[in-house]
Length: 258
Image (tube, rainbow, N blue to C red; front, side):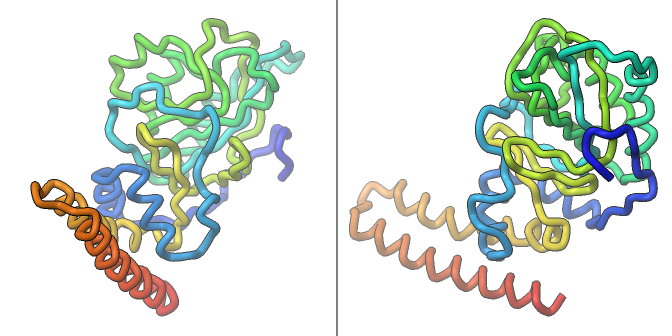
């Protein structure tokens, strides 16, 4: 399937994880989750997260996690195809093949961005039909109205107008800031940014977050001591490094067994 076409794939399957793992992942910020993923050493430490200008419009909201339901978008010029403006309902139907929660990930094909990818109505619709958030390389609008929806939005900018908005391709690989996201990929996002969790290790990542935080917390607790010294801090870092290495080794052994 080629990006930019009007083809869709309703038969696409996704590797799912237990709901309990998603519940656990929502308890940790994306920076912690990113650190835990690094312990598995399955991808370079500079891969798997959105860099650049895509950021949380509502950074005070808690972390969200869900399966990516993808689309591409244009608004820079009108189209002669009247059905192009009716693809949101098609997207909603397609995403029902994936379990909840879902996160809509939408690539703006216009460069530069011409109009807002989303606004209040679109956010209400996507929330109503099973999405926990929308992530776009394009723009948002109606941001004061959407704030009241308790719905997470991640966008590159805010633009007042919508241009000639339409979704083009549905459930295809999309590329946001150099990161390819496939339908069904697991997305974790919060005020720190947007992260892709490899589906194959998502359950193990969730299980390891508490131990990771516990190791890190020992350093924080030492620094809170009134008698803390630089030497003592370095010793606490050395101890933590050994514990992180042990955790990483156990995670990688578990991955090989699986």
